[in-house]
Length: 345
Image (cartoon, rainbow, N blue to C red; front, side, top):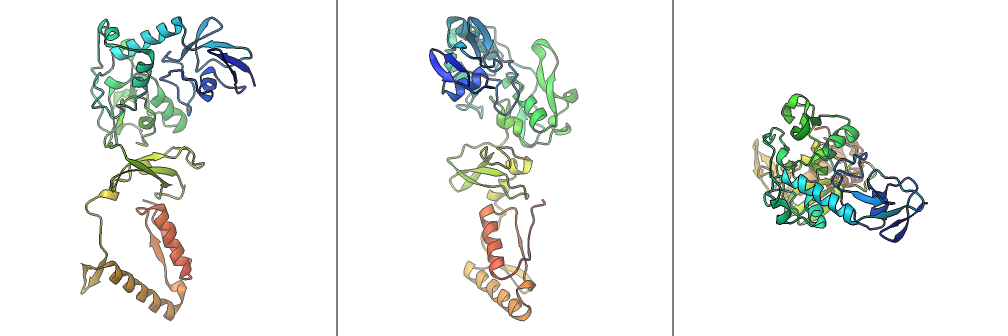
């Protein structure tokens, strides 16, 4: 393990680590905008610039070597970072209050760290993307005025999903993230998984429906048999968000379009809230006691007459994983393995 020195602190780094990774492991903050631990290094934002043995290099691409001396906040480093962030902000939408990433934005954090002030920005000629926001996708929007061209969404689509629905297009000051031929997202080969929006460090890729939860509940997605781990964001008695569980060995935080966005039915006003029993050919509301007694009676009659294998149960992908587990356990206690599940929606 190479021994390196970051701001005078001796650190034992992993042999194949970069300076940025070694600093993170040691709890030392080096600002960055285009780095993401799930993706290959890009080195495009230049915000993670550090001084290594007297030379300015990007920390995300610099491998550690024995005896390396790193300065993360020298005057030269601070100047490069500040000017870089100023140039990014000069072309960035200044309306943070309406952005879903407000107070959860990497650009805000980096700007605060490098000490950007109104005086810094006043000396710059501000511009903004004139490309209209792409609102065609049913789940998220692409707002070019908030894009910092970090490439995280591009690499996510290429490296994680293997779809490559988006890439950099045009040149110079007109460079932007776009689909093939600049067609709307909904007409491209985008699968609407939302992985790009989940990793976007700003509000450039923003979920259309977004509420911040007051708490989260760990569970398993019920849509198919893969078993992806998820966290349901809860606010009051409503589920308002879903995010992938990065510790889950099945999906490692990744989700498909159904797992990430298919939760709005939970709070839908058309959902049944009381049991229904069919009387004289019409469904009528009943109490839970009535319904349970009826089901128990019918089960008893069938099992006594034909045995437990005459009973079967169909569970639902629109119930929780825990409820489905309880359901299959009930059926097996009745003595039957005739259990199916509709996780093929």
